[in-house]
Amino acid sequence: MPSSLRVALIGRPNVGKSTLFNRLVGRRQAVVSPVAGTTRDRLHGPLIWRGQAITLIDAGGVEWDPATPLAQAVQGQIDRALREADLVLWICDAQAGLLPADELLLEQLRKRAKPILLVVNKVDEGHTVAAEFHGLG
Image (cartoon, rainbow, N blue to C red):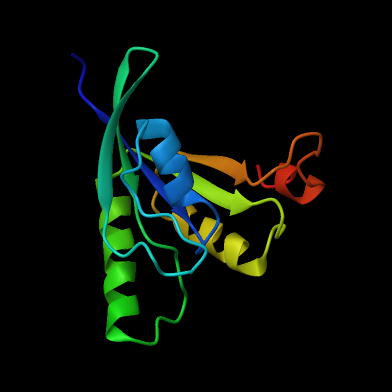
């Protein structure tokens, strides 16, 4: 079997990273909750996509000023996920729109010099993705 591509799911809190992780690995491995900060550690989940072995890495939501030691530890887990990853799936929330925190995160992700794919999540059927996401390049 080919070596596993490591793909990190990265985004703000509650953009749907863990839900997407569970859907892609085909089981409920990550805890999903409307409460921000539920995901704290990195989770790894295997899948095969078009013959390619992939290891998905789910991590907590990115915060810019973690106020507590726990929040700082979560941000450390996100940093480790990014170091491990060969590819980053940058997850944004279509319902919230593109926020300044998303743009700041993109700026930080680009400094990592790893391929980034934008995933706009929470798009209801029949709706289109806001034009602001199309302009990100």
